Length: 170
Image 1 (cartoon, rainbow, N blue to C red):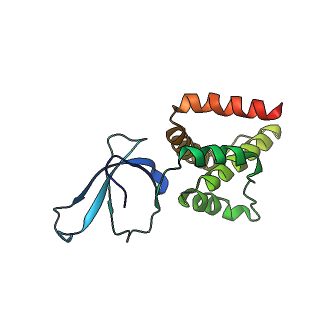
Image 2: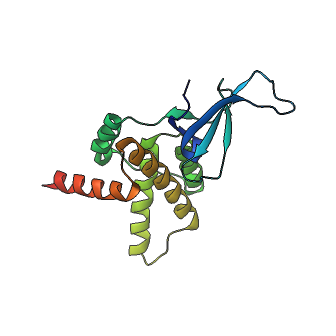
Image 3: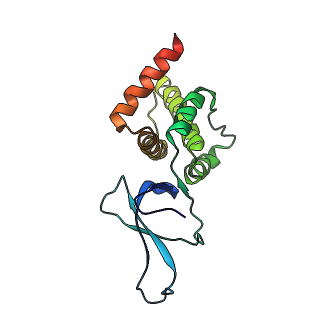
């Protein structure tokens, strides 16, 4: 069970703060059922209610610790892109990866779309709206979690990653 004030990752909403744990006073909802009251960090005026008993199918998990984030950053070069064997299944694969709520899967989407964008640009073609949508989602979720886990802003995260990989190249 999460505690008030903790940060969690919830489905495609990304990092959220547990604002409260309470029972809802709404018709049709058992009065003794507890809910997490979540506030997404990306959309401050949004509130999400999730049953504590976990009957909902969306993923709710704790954010990475600093150590886990550092280990994840170390592993970034080894993470492979998504292999799309059927173009008609491309969006379904992206969607599944995003909904998995796993940083490694978000990174796979980012890497896949980065290389796909480079290839399309080299061919004189633009990136697709679908690709841009999933790239934004994956980048936003991953940046939120890493910056929160490392205790730095998104801007500082970009500098951190650049310096880290510059050191690795030497």
